[in-house]
Length: 80
Image 1: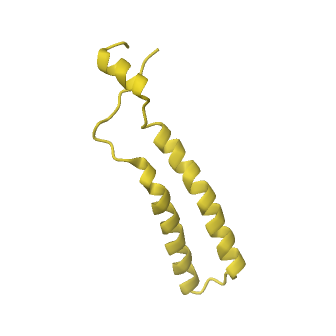
Image 2: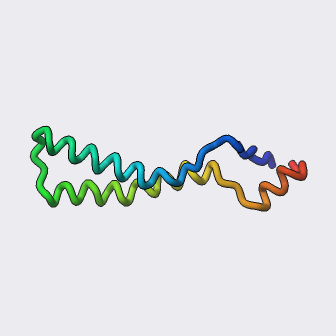
């Protein structure tokens, strides 16, 4: 079985849950400021969906960049 190779230069992907949620919040505020008529309930629903989907998206990306200690040990020791 071919082991993935960790990239020591990759950044931490998991911080982006906050970034995604903040971006959706900012975009929503901008859209409302420019005249899109959204009720408070609609805004809350959009933010709720973002709050659920952002961690799922980040988990998918993060999982491809995170390695268990056993995998790192195998790669380090050349047990490919």
